[in-house]
Image (cartoon, rainbow, N blue to C red; front, side, top):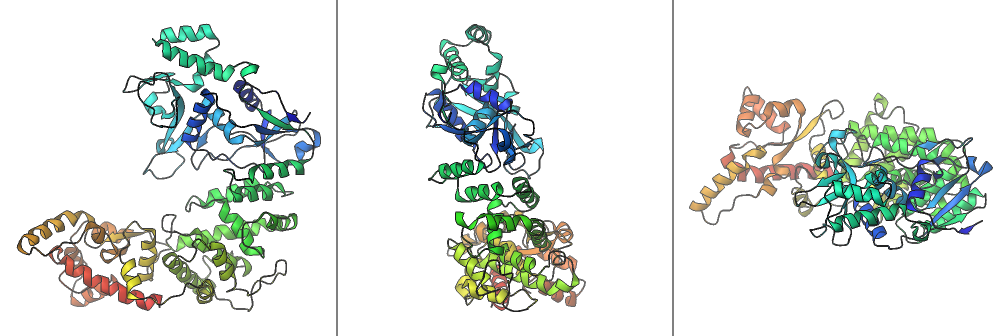
Length: 593
């Protein structure tokens, strides 16, 4: 019978997850909680706080085949193990689909049975244990110190197994005893708790905390923690509507998650969730995108209204997307492949939104198979690259991104009419980058103030790659690996500073340049990996002299690398900085105007 049901214990809920009696419908979003949210959830449970009722749908008979259903995560790893496994419900017993409560149930399951893998800061992204902290949830039984999180009373922490050695009891540097939460299943009853406590020399308060935790998991029906409402009507569309209504009222589920749920729930043949997630995962090997960009791409390519709105994703629109899916997927892949050939990577592509006009042109001009390598598309590659690099500098997609999206599409067709199969106002075969900039209303005169401002960009700023790519347009970014390189080597700044301090003694009004300026564009160039390896940390003056056989070579070399023809010693860095800045500004004026 539909309605609120008798509450169940945490242990009963966990058993149902393990036995596949709880599954996730395709339209349910993926797991998104951070470690601190899980820790605070366990604290709330220990304090007896209500954690809100959950909403389940009882799935029987033909309803099992209405949607695709997925298992709960068996463990979580940032970027690499975030997708739930598809579960074949054919012949499976009746089960419950979780409409609301998935994040909380998954969090409890991970804490009691699994691990949460956190990427190590500064490590390259790869699906390799060495690049992650593999953490298990521990409960502080001692609590002789204030918890790190001031919001909690009971301290739970995800701790790296390299620190705990995966012991059931881990003692930290403050002599606090931490209990591995998954070990609670090795303790059967109160006598086991007493024996376990004696074996580990627990104090009375430590034993009491362990007893309370055991009670939390295995408590009686009268103290059960999982409250839920059960929907029993076998109408899959009603289940989707309930899910949307529950999750569109100001909760943490964002609007694009709801749209994604609608989209994948209405694909008839393909497994939309797997298809879209797979596309995102492939692109994420080089560019860290999410499904929002894919959804926005659907609208930019085919819909009158580019804004995220529920009524945009009606059945007819979703059906048309499913029919075109392979060509859309391939176009996304080739578009990002094109960006990679420009030398871009995730940290230098500061605006993922800038790809949408490129995607539109490639898709509707049927250039997917030709845009990256075909000789016939050489001019388009040049124009697209110019548009993209300028967009990364001028940043047209700000807070009013949807308005800019609509405007940029007008560069292709003034009045977009959904379903008309007309996507261009004329038959031009060239990417209209000037019209796009005009429609986006961000064309501007490149004045000295703006150019002085961008000269402040430093080596690791994402815009720096775009600017250097414009300044060094003839390099083969597709076939070579290029580095942003300091002309005067980075590790020589201390020497320059020492020279400056000595000069300041003689000339009190003199100020040497800060490292922020030393690290900025006037002291940067683009070098291919081989050249950079040869240059290494050589003095700039030495590198130029060794690279040039005669005066003619020197002149050509300096022009190619945009280096002023002056004394290139470190002692003359101040003069070098000002003259090279002027040289770069003069060239950018010509390029950007």
